[in-house]
Image (cartoon, rainbow, N blue to C red):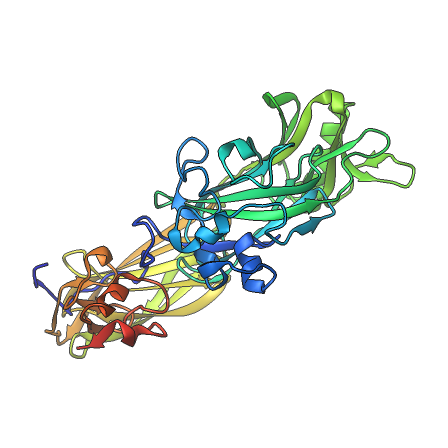
Amino acid sequence: MSRLNTVSTAISSMAVLVALAAPQYAAAHGYLNDPPSRAFVCAKGLNADCGAAQYEPQSVGETAKGFPGTGVPDGKIASGALSQFSALDIQSANRWHKTEIRDRTINFDWYYKATHPATKYEYFITQNGWNPNAVLTRESFDLTPFCVIDAGGRLPTDQPQGSEGPAREKHTCQIPGDRSGHHVVLGIWTVDDTPGAFHDVVDVNIVAEAETPDGWRPVGNITPRDDLFVGDKVSVRALTSEGESSEFSSQVTIATVEEGKSENWSFKLAEQLNAANTLVRAGVRGEDGTIKPVRGTNNLYAKQESGVNRYELQMELVEDAQAQLSIQSFDENLELVKGRATLAVTLATNRKMNVEATVFDSTNKAVGSSTATLDAGSATVDIALVSAPGDHQLKLIGVTPDGRTTRQALQALVLAGEGGGQEYDAVYPEGIETYAEGTTVLQPEDGNVYECKPFPASGWCKQNGHHYKPGTGSDWQDAWTLK
């Protein structure tokens, strides 16, 4: 790498997270929290002899996307073909603790140690008659997922990209009515902006009743989490073994603000579905066995002869035309001291938004960035800058948590004062896979330059986890020296 950069340039601190021994596409980490994944049960101490999985369940199953057509090889489905987690590929009838499933309506809940945008989530389950003593292969599973969640390329948490935190939403799914006893559920989180995906297997014992005495089988639910806008469309899509059934599906378009309230659109959708069919029902069962819609969560039921195995809830959302985001004020007389300064920017929004504010120099290099989640109102965001005097631009991007609306703003600014002069090879984490002994990097989070230590410590320089980030990680001094 040529030493053409100086500390007068920097980039956004949004980082690509790459594990030391993981594939190059690694970008995020997380695990199924409830029901707990096999690895998370190891961390809880309920599974033994798990190897490295008990210490970092969030990294288990990190592999290429594309299952079942491509992706992880058979026999490595649980570990993601990562050798440090190969203990999880051991399979026998009594090897792993089983989570008891008493309700076929199940809410899959993820926890993220480093969040990234998600394309989709898929949930597969082992077939009836699978051999629990044989290694997990594609033949072990029903290769049609019993639940698919379209994540739309949005961040799955309310935290900024790369942050740690719980999922914003649980995935409400329906365990197939013909499955009972010991099964393995495979949950796949497909990352949107990398070639990667995360496999998490869950060992379960299904004890839920498969069918009510009068023949109604639970096949899903309509859970109204948010209010909808006029023009939004919401559908329940009926799925059979042959694909989607339009006969037993239904859709409503929100016509008024009142109709868009969560309890109202759920009721309307359930009522419309019931009016059109006799073999499927939406609502809540009363003491007399009748199923009637309610203003809230409505369960979905189907008769065997309908062929419906499950329902998916799908929404087509219009943009929030009233959403606003603007730069209210900033220090127009900011001066750099040895190439560094902190720019305080006051922002105004009338909606909750995930916001990224970035400052670019005259060559369009990012010299400082900050991310935040803002509630409606005004708030100040501090941006640490490493640059040289001259013309700059402040770029503001805001996205509502539901991903339906984006707002942008651009403001010219001029920085006075003095520039810096210390050289470096790269702006962290650019080119992280090439870092070696002697590599120097600018850490845009604190504006300092760090040098990668000699082998064998140099291997940790390629690890962009929170432990080894130069200057800010808990163990950064194992890998880096402050210049």
